[in-house]
Image (cartoon, rainbow, N blue to C red; front, side):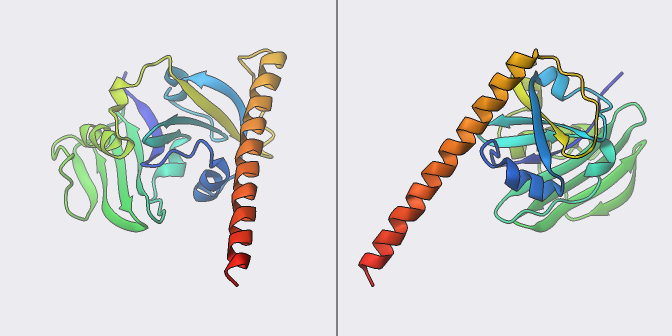
Amino acid sequence: MGFNIAGAVFNKNFENHVEELSNILKIELEFVEIVDFESASENWKDENIFDVYFCETGTIVFGESNRFVDEIFVPDCKVLSFEMSEVTMAFWFNYTENGKLIRSFMEVEGNRLTDEGEPLPSEDPEDGSESIWNQIGVVLGKSFHEIDLEEKAHRYIVKGSNLEYEYDLSEEEIKSVISSVNLTNKNISGSQNRKASTEKKWWEFWK
């Protein structure tokens, strides 16, 4: 059958910076539950669902295909946005570094319809699918195919989308996960506030 997926890969872990990730994607993400990587990377995703896999060296966002056919520009970050349909043999590949386009192509049934920038070392000139898989590994810092299907990913919906989402977790499990996420964010915020307070006193000391 082949993969029919779309998404974006960043060489930065956004697990504690979901608001920043929302701004990059130009949507407001609302956490709903934890899913496994197999579910996160499944084909044909609803336009209002985003599954996000975080690892030590990067982040993968999976979403509806049309959201990732364009370039994503992020300062101080490497980003691959892609769409892959191994059924129709159609591939979109956009790679940026530090807010600048490095490489872009669109390939359908082996024909390059657009081609911009110099080919990357990871590319297979005869296989758009393989080029995407390889570059995902380069940006993420680990091969897509080496990720355990049981590893955890975070599922988000677009806030305000009125999506009637069916949870795989019980109500109590959902509350527990959300509470844990909120506590983590609170601890991070508190730590940042303490740091800011300390820096202010230090600054005043030198006045």
